[in-house]
Image (cartoon, rainbow, N blue to C red; front, top):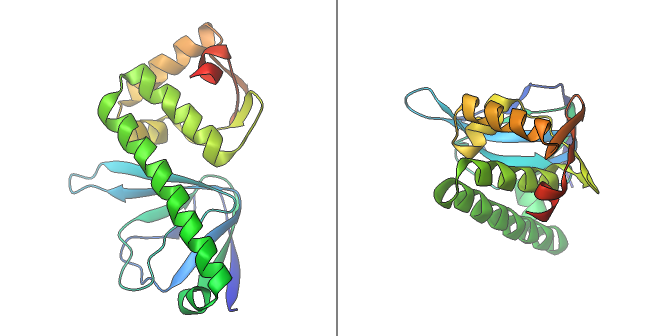
Length: 188
């Protein structure tokens, strides 16, 4: 099977809207965000990706979104036709699509039905599931602006809520990009 592996530094573009589809990129290590630019110039974060996730499932045409490395990443680019002709890999790809669909349903619910605090609590849960968590400690390599773009909130609301959570130990910063979730977030 034809595979090329490329390393991307933090904040580097993995692919851009308008790029030709044809290879299927799978994140081998690191974390990435998928986003689109709206007509008015705002950015909407569509998805988070962790090690083992495919970054898109497009096999032809042009891509309609961007992928950016949140951390240093290794990405394997599989030839789509070869991948889909292998029954085991095609089955794995279908499983990945089902998982992503479940993640997207949670994201849609977060955007449509929840208060700001509930959105951020759900985001923390989604990020822990996607980017990795060990017990109460999780990696969160996103900026507050990226979190705002994912949750549909303003930067000020995200910052205010995070500051309150730090004061009451709902979410405590351990180091750059690493947080400890308090009981309230673990129970959410």
